[in-house]
Length: 389
Image (cartoon, rainbow, N blue to C red; front, side):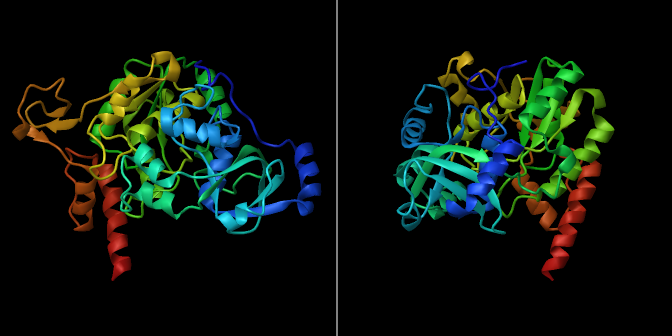
């Protein structure tokens, strides 16, 4: 099976004995409270999903990622993973201290930050280098500007997991997926990233990829997304229904991706690939405008970014797909690589257009989505519109 990024799967989860020792010291430690976004980042570092990171980035790694898309040691990494606080909070913390991290929501103790560094974030520059814009209307930029101005760097020790209330049966740590893939006898696994309900183009890409690998890992993102995105519960239900009827059960695993959406396009495509490599996937599907939003990125820019690296530097293989559509002449899904007919015979429907149709009470056509999924989406939008009345 493919090695984790950096060669080692990180584990920063405290043993029961370590946890007891830290809890004895907890009252003596300075503490900070953080929102759910940061708690999920903590958990993803601790479980090894963000390997080789062992904590939040120090200044050298942060600068290197912004300037070179690499950690200071040269390992490819494309997105800053930082813990930000307001200056007045940072001023009270000293480098080399152990800081207790608590939940902003319920005050529960979650982790220890072994503070190694504190430094100002280069927010304007970070926005341009990660998101290719500093426009506040970009959701990733907006979130960046709203965060604290000082970053805290250092390894972490996770004391408690988040008490997730949904998708329990679909939550797998990298150590779990690697075990499952091995038990199934899969040596090559293709990952599929999505933040939208499944539609026919997704199905086409997934099944085309499944022809050349042993298994398919469908990995819908269930972290923080935009308010207008369809809720994760609805998206997951659509996958459950479709997998039950249209996919070979012994060749597919469905598991949630507990990572916050950045909408960073190309940079996020590399980040997503690295995370799926840590899960044990050998391939990842990179389609049109992966992790994009608005018109900030070129249609296939998220595929082109992988050409900046030697294959062994990332390790996982990106499968680069053209924009899929339904051809009325071929009477099936296709891309420009496989269909000879003109655009007048092609049915292109973006997720945005379909959301507009649904909000008007219009049923998506069968060329876009399976009827079972259309039923789920129609019901969701009907209930949503009724709630507004």
